[in-house]
Structure formats: structure tokens, C-alpha cells
Length: 572
Figure 1 (cartoon, rainbow, N blue to C red):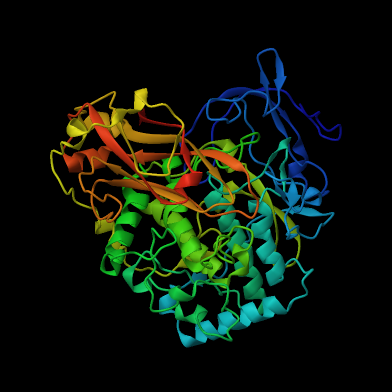
Figure 2: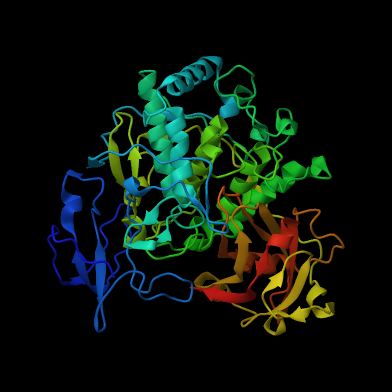
């Protein structure tokens, strides 16, 4: 366990903690002992010092975050992810061969860190839908990016350094503060949305300052709407600073974007738009009754990378990365984590992901917030350079409302809200007639080099309306082991009686997917996905069945995927 820095003032106290977080989070009471380093209260702190450390007093003494681990590899006594020591940034390591990356994406080092406070919102920044943007706006955006690209490469606000920000935080170049044996990764966990929101926030403010326009907002690529399901024209014009030659040449306008893209063009292009809307309905409505299933799995100090991505991240987000990038194994620029930030279209892609987060928080009425009240999420923090080239520390807790961060989105229709698919077969006998093995008797792990079908027992059936309100029935596919350097995708179907279950997802039998954007480095990770069953089983009219038939259909890289287990759980 790391020792507590002598420069910290420490207190040990029993805490009855009541949340005072934004958005009226429900009050929660926890009793714990804390050893707290209070230097975060200072306005500045040295860049090479750990600014904050929380250790919990457990039975028998103090335990570091990595000393006790739960079944999902998260520390039993946890602490929030803290900003990395950027002076210790490495070029990254190919963990299978111990060869360094051939790219250095480490940022400039500053001896001064400022704890960032959101400035008062005097003028709201407006983010338009890219396909609706006018000529005057496009000219302004092109000028801003041109000026950013003209900055010296060592300026932290330059286009090169802004691209490196994504590379550094996403390719295991930083060690976790508080657990030097574990690398930091901001994808495939509950940090995905808040980290990228901060990233775009400062990128946008840098562009606005370069053109002296405090109202400037990034355009969002509206790929969840049929009218926006193509590469925006402003990015497709050769000679524009928004153009990038490292793209799939088959996907320039008027090609239709494919939100379930797996490296091959859809066999029936006439079905792509409706499949896209169904993909969005599943990611934003059907599969997100529990916060973890939208945001991603819990990720704290000591957690190994990739504990589990949320519905949008592993679905449409990944598909669009790979759809834009080159049709090569490494997929530059957009199709690989290390180079994605070099693609101007990346920022509009993620502006739409950011918009979807805002939509998710407002889709359901009622007083219950759609954020984690957990301090291990809210107090997670990162480092970025702001529009004044100052290194600043930011917290997840300050990202929850985009309006408080000073920007808003153009309002557009949400056709996917009305895209709930219908069952191809009611009262399906697929499970009763199947000769597939029972998941409980299947010898896992299994390789996904072909379609895998298993019967999964349902511990509870014929649930009442109140039961469903209290608990979501979830299909859990766990121990998903993949190589981070490979693009992989598989899709999940329940009680599908079609001969070719992978041809169409515009049907209630489609439960969801798993996919990942490739990394430059190569290491094996284990992850999981959880897919909502309550609505799906209602649509299939099989709520009284003892079992369901689960089909795992590999779409890309199946030979590099192994599955550790499949089960059903009930989440309160």
C-alpha cells in the first residue's frame, strides 16, 4: 500500500455521508473511515505530486484501493480515479511483445495545476446539427480548425496535441494514481461520457478563442436521424481543414452510415436506416433501465481496464469509428484509439455521443436523477489544458448538465423513440424445440469463431408488473476476452427462429451487441455486457417460459473472442 504523503493534512473520522451533489441526488448514508489528503483545496498543486488520496479504514487496519477485490475485479474498498501524473506518461507498451508504440502521444508537462471551476455562463454556446449548418457557420468552423492546425506542435492547444490527449488517455500510457501496477483507461466504463465531455469542452473553447467567438459550438454529427445518416458534406470537401484522406473511400457521401457496421457493407442497403433506428432504440430505451447499462461499469482505483462498456459506446459509437476509418486492420485515423483524435470528424461524432448523454438524462420524467450518486464516480478527476494553455484538474461532478457548462444543442426529432421492433414470432417455441446445450452445463470459455447457441435458465418467470418495476431481468454475457488491438463485434439474439439471425435486427429478438474500437497496443482484456430482457420477453410473449435460447453471432473477429459465461440476473 502506498504511504500517505507527509505534506498532507490527514484526518480520520467516522462519516455519515449525505450527498450534496448537483441535480438533487437522493441522500445516501454510508459509514466509513477516511484518510484524506486535502491539497485539492489548494488553488494550485505541483504536477508531479498526488493531489488527493482517499484510503478507507477496514477491519484490521488500513487497506489500499487495490488490496481487496470483488468478483468483478473492482476494489472492495474503493477510491475515485484520480488525475494521472502526466510526467510519468510513457509511449505505451505492446503488452504481448513488450515493444513500445511507434507514436509518442504524451502531453507537455507543466509544474502548475489549477483546480478548474466552471466560469459563469454569460453567453451560451450553440452546437448545431452538422447537416443543417449554414455556409457562414461552416466557414467559421473551418477557420477555427485552420488556426488550431497552424499552432506550433508543442503548444498544448494545437491540433496535434489535442489529438494526443485522446491517444494518451486511451492507450495505457498512464498508470493509475494510487495503483502504479494498473494502467488508466477512460473507455469501456462509467468514465466514458464525462471524460469525453470535458475533452470536447476544452477543444471547443480553444477553437472559440482562436476566432474570438464565445458563442462558437461544435457541430454534432446527427447519425441517429435519417437525415443525418451520411458523412456531413463539410468534412468531405478536399482542401478543407476538416478533410482527412485517411478514411474509407466507400463511405463518403452519399453512402448511408451503418450503426452496426462490422467491416463489411450491409447486404441489403434498403434496411440500413431502419436497422440504425432499432439499434438506437435498444441503446437508448430498451437496454438502459439500469444506469450501469447506459454509462458503463464501475471503474475505480485498482480496476483493470475495460470492465464493461455502456450501450451506446459498444454499439453505434464503435460502429461509426470503424465506418469512418480506413478499411485496414489498424483502421487509421478514426478506426483506432491512438489516431482517432487526428480525424476532425471525431469531434462531431463525439458531440453527438455527448448529446445522447444529455438526452438520456431527460428521457424519463420524475424526480429520480439518471446519474450515479456514488462519490467514486462524481469525484473522479482528470487533467486537460484549457484555452489559455493552463493545465487544469476537472471533476466528473461538474459535467452532469451541459447547460451549466455553457453549451446547448440544436433540437431535432428523435425517430428512434418510436422504433420499438416487433416480434417475428409470438409464443416462440425456439427454446423448447432447440437441441442446444444448457448454459449451466456448457464448458466455458468458448471461442466465438462460429454462431454459439445455448439455453439459459430463467430463475424467475411470470413476473408481475410490480416485480418488473422493482427488478430488471438482465442477460449477462461475462468473461468476454478480446485482444485490444483487434476490431471485434458480435450480436445477441433471443429465441430467434430465422435461419440467418444476423441478417436483420429490426425485430424484437435482437437483444444487443458487443464491439470495441481497436487500440494501437495489444493486450488481453476481459469485459461483460448486460442486456435488458423484460421488454423483449413481453414482445415475444414468452414470459412464462423456463428457458430462453440465446444466439451469439460473430460479425467481426470472432476467432479472437472467447466467452466466459452466460446467465440471467435480476437488478433491483
